[in-house]
Image (cartoon, rainbow, N blue to C red; front, side, top):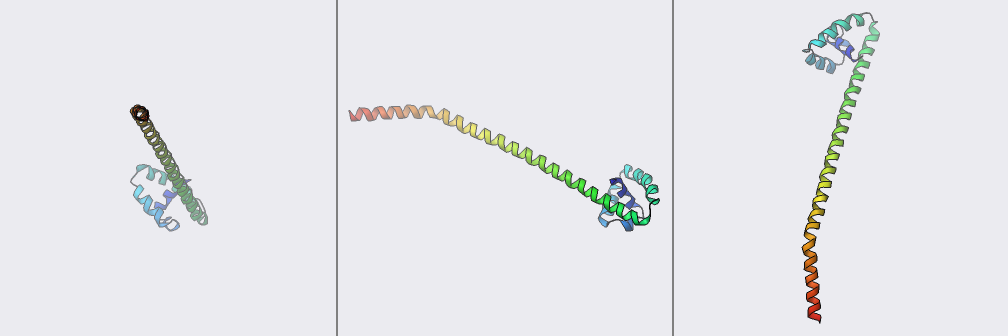
Length: 125
């Protein structure tokens, strides 16, 4: 259904198409596939009544926009998911490094506290 938009490249049907579609399709017309699709779709479109052509082109344009927007949404959703997973990994690594640092440095403090309390006991007695 989206391939119907290539008909906009035909001079007969340019008046039925939004200008942005024509600009985009002209930039894509370098691709050999576009010319083949145009050659195969144009005869089918010529059989339709003129009042249906504009509706068909606009509906194809809306479907194309919906497809592009859904692809963008999916890409953003995947990117956000990957960034959140990266954030969680960094956060876990941060907490692990802090925990290991505290655990490693905790032993001398216990010894120092023990010596300090022994010193206080010695002074008080």
